[in-house]
Length: 357
Image (cartoon, rainbow, N blue to C red):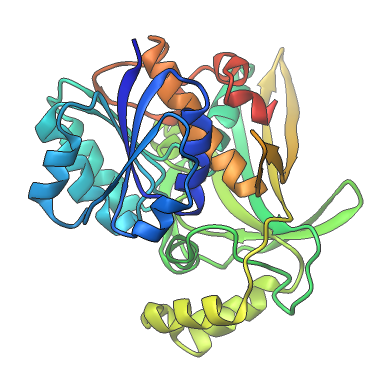
């Protein structure tokens, strides 16, 4: 029997989730969004649509009622409202948020809940935490875990060497908010856009710097067991300095609505992108100081006859795989569930997780 699931949000990522879940026939899928035009552009196979103002709590609960699973692909600032409504109607809850404060609210809501609350199910946070945690299991003791992720245009043409590929609000959030890290064994907040480094992979030069939210709950999971843990966003060289000028010197970090307008007016979206995942772990293994690395690139391609960007594929595949794992009994069905509780082998063996394989 198909699992009743409601997806909130029919935008870039929501449309990809719709295509993936709708193609299986295993989910009785309803997609709700206040933008009727977005809903009309969605794949229609095995999908119902509903125009809904998610900010209206009464309407939100009414739409959720009768669904076993709620999946949110909405902006992070709506997370507390949506997660609270999911708890009230007794549904399992999944989201993609990278926002630290929103996730803390979800964690509180999960206390005493009869259903699972599974936030941060995308790429970073999300898959990156599953990979990093799996790698740490090989070590007797840990020294450093370095996590690097980037969603980049294959053909950069502007001074930022960047195109918009996902939520602009989320992007600005990452560039402006404090970042969690473990430094010398202690959990700390470090500033975004700092601690820049350079590296090369497959002959391409990159830069990486602190951004907010990518660690998810991994810092809490590994605290007390590791010396240093950090997450940085990967860009082509030169990007950070321009963003830092906008955020700090021009103070657009304090006027985020203006920064959003500037970025969305000036920078085109692209479906010709690449997602880079790069994790390095060092520590004691079989009595020796050892380092192991994981590197993966995912490119845009057709999924079910629809061209999807790499960030659409990786983000949607991440949350769809986690939904599958819960339905299949491979994740806890009650309380707060961390991404790193998912088994990497089970994730990659999943029909959606295979997009990362």
